[in-house]
Length: 137
Image (cartoon, rainbow, N blue to C red; front, side, top):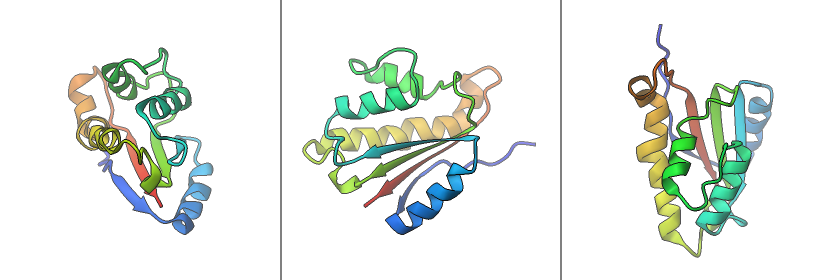
């Protein structure tokens, strides 16, 4: 039986975030990656954190395509669910809004749909995985 997965970007306030993090910390099937929007001001800041926290096999700073390949692979990770929390979202890439828009657009149009459905067609034996991005202000 195929379970229905809805991958999305959700806004959340800090109070609800604390409850969510408490719940997620008890689930060893979830990889939680937190980014600080205050400290994430460029593509390099963003991709350096992501490749480190997701343990990408090779660096991606010089290639958006490589980043998109790795974030749609993740076969080396045991977790079945992924959560990215972007704290201080209004400050996330504040000096570089086009980068912020590109990153969020990649989630909406490429990464989340891939893990929700497309993985079945693109990867032999591929199974959908939950992938949620929380934006917090």
